[in-house]
Image 1 (cartoon, rainbow, N blue to C red):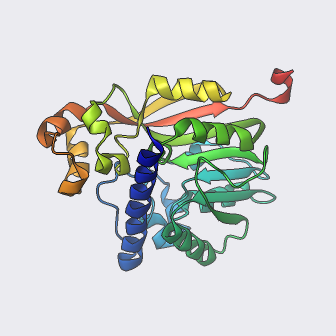
Image 2 (cartoon, one colour):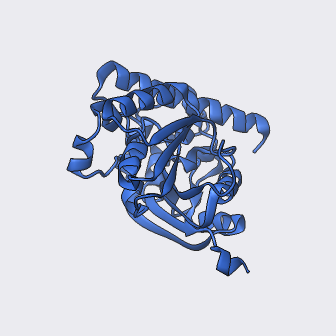
Image 3 (cartoon, rainbow, N blue to C red):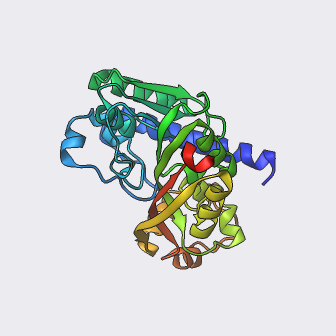
Length: 278
């Protein structure tokens, strides 16, 4: 992928999620059509947060439960959006812990900070930046979470390298993401609307594990949580404009082909501790 392509993808993702933030602001109860999956939060968790935080949850799982967070830990959420996972994490790591949210979309950061104020959460901080260049020091984080965002990156090796850098020895990665069960046709990979809709940018499960291993992670596990059928893929396609889809793509045939190829998954990995590095 060229630098120009990466910039185009990042701009398209940024605009789509800015629009999602504006939609939440406008309705305070809307969802982001075309984004695959729905978050899975306990009723008590959802009730403890502002409605706008829940409405802006555009993920495909609940990484705050996957991460098994403990008081005193420092957590980083990659692509924190409206802040739901950061705010829940902050509650779980209190007292003594802190949760950071990282997002590149100003509209989402503004929404997240408002949600933080409304929720009265003081041990959280939202940072502007990208997953490929995290604005935190080396070995400053115990746990990295993310919810259906890594697939959006045009440079996933950089994401995993940065995650490894900021994690402390023995730290853990616990994310929900969209993962492929089989490879996508080249034309589908180039469809910008399917990139921003979490499909085209997803990695094969085997490639995902390989890239994490190359970054230095160990104890890698990818667990499928839901396989998406053609109806789910059709929901994404129905929200795309003609400009999002190349003329070379037969939409109906592509929807049929993608059925069963895409899944949401829990991805777990660990940074080796100091003893294992000696």
